[in-house]
Length: 166
Image (cartoon, rainbow, N blue to C red; front, side):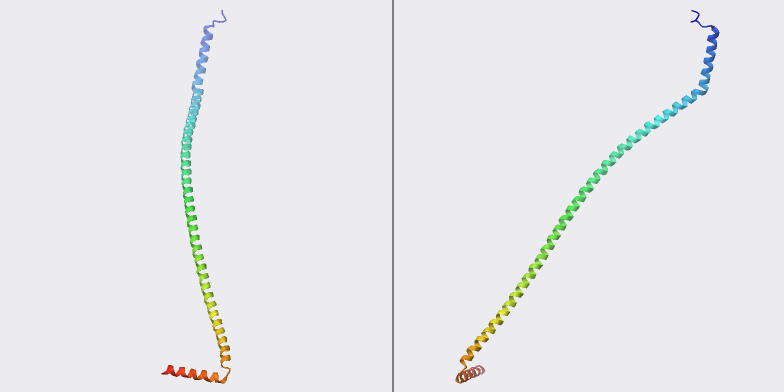
């Protein structure tokens, strides 16, 4: 049993070595360990703080993105309404221009038809009068072929002229 019971000197020296080792660790190693633990704690705190900031920024970015999307949709709807209004306006202007142009063409056609009708009427009158003169000339030649017929016509015309002058 002697193996299991240590001597007083061994216990004393073990205690002295333990105390010296504890003193050395407390003096040199303990501040380094505490400093490392504090740095690690600060790093972890900063990481947590950075993560919280990142989370807040992400939430803000999501809110901003939703706001921008909503604003873009409003602008898109406004642009579409404006385009529809412009389209309607262009169609109306085109209809008005087409109506005015058709009216001009119709008026020009009516004027042209009226001019053609008047020219045809004038030409018809000229041809009828020319034809009537030719017929009258032929009739007069046949009637005035004899000399006494010419004298009767002249006397008759003179009598008419005298009656008109009185």
